[in-house]
Amino acid sequence: MIARFLTLAFLLLGIPAISAQSGNWWKGNLHTHSFWSDGDDFPEMIAAWYKTNGYHFLAISDHNILLEGQKWIALGTNANRRTALEKYRAAFPSQVHVRTNGTNIQVRLTALPQLKKMFEQRNKFLLIPSEEISAQHDKAPIHINATNIRELIKPRGGTNVLEVMQNNIDAVLAQRHRTGQPMFPHPNHPNFHYAISAEDLMRVEGERFFEVYNGHPAVFNEGDDKHPSTERIWDIVLAWRLGILNMEPMFGIAVDDSHQYHADSPKNANPGRGWIMVKARKLTPEHIIHAMEDGDFYPTTGVRLRSIERTPKKLEVRVDPERGVEYEIRFIGTKRNFVQGQGSDGKPNVDAAKIGRELTAPIKGTKATYHLQPDDLYARALILSTKPKKNGLLTNEVERAWTQPIFPTK
Image (cartoon, rainbow, N blue to C red; front, side, top):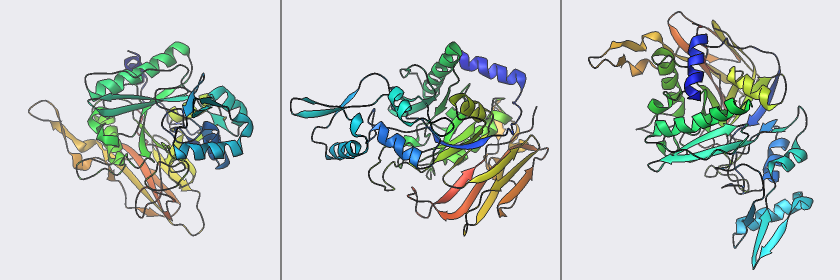
């Protein structure tokens, strides 16, 4: 019900004006795991890694749990957990609380309120409460991150993938409506087990975000010969939502989905692979969320942007270049004529080959501008560099960034 109300409000008001607000660029990761669920390190160690590596905000989003109350983990004979404890004890000796249950050593995990006291600094570093609501349909993992959540949400089921997604998204939006606290859901890693198709994602109501890049090696961002890449999924979703379904656009997020912190490898879900840069006046959950809802952010795996100008008429990108690195800017979009009437069954006659095409020739350099054409449904930019991606998931992977789409106002 809440999702349908928000969609109706969107349709009545039209697509919100594209923002170009002033502010600072804040670097953050919204998808992270710790010992509170299936990560392999203590939350203090994880928060310290992100803070010392230049991040301004972090959401530790463990599965079906909030970092509250008391939780103890058992070391057992797990050598990796014992090594993690040694590192934890060396870095935060006063934080370590150990008890013995028979011959088994147990360690207490630190909850979010204490973590915030330890790490947060005004306009320097922020910890945002989060949960990865982990549901499934017929063994397919349907995971929804809830950012800045106030209360735990138990996973909802459903009769199909779309219904499971919608039920869990509705639960987050209902909590936002009831509490008045800014928060948002976003579907995670659609290509993890290829659980979420573009056809399902495009029809979710009340949703504004999804993960176009996820740093976990099991999510297959690039797709395969039977499944589209997440970037291709983005274009399909944008084309249908804007051109056929009369729904709000979706913005792309890049995340780590980090689980492993002790050994860097393309086979491990390590930190530092994907993040978002948000332009907001203040480093608070409210400012971050509102800026993201306005599209004032970009996902990246390393490319830094100096500025992005997004208006209903043009998209201008300026790269913050690194010495010795070359850049290529590609403008990608879909024309309105990708829909060519209706078929005999009454369904839209869609030319899939016209979805997500390059609108101009690739532009070499650090600045490029695209002027929206009358027949454009939307336009976005992909920025490629020649700099190899450190600890990337793919062979010969290079650093990239994406802008959010622009679209004509109604």
